[in-house]
Image (cartoon, rainbow, N blue to C red; front, side, top):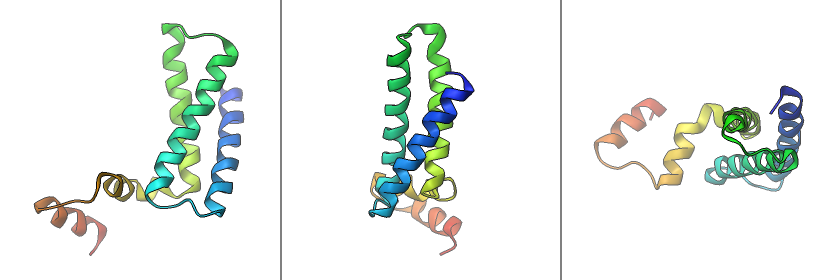
Length: 106
């Protein structure tokens, strides 16, 4: 994926994420929504280009991560990613909870 296509898809995904955020998608679903929408945009570009070779797979991966980082910024996930992942996994228990809470400032 070249940079122009990556930025175009990132812009579209960011707009959809902003719309979803305005209707209440937050918290543990935000990371999943951003990842899935980014993946959908990347797959659509790959399908439109009809190029699924090994040589281009890395370019699609790099494009997906660029799009995901843009989409994650809408939900503020860059700063809250560890907490969002922990929430998706069902929380932290035991000694790890003490470290997690100390990092969070509780």
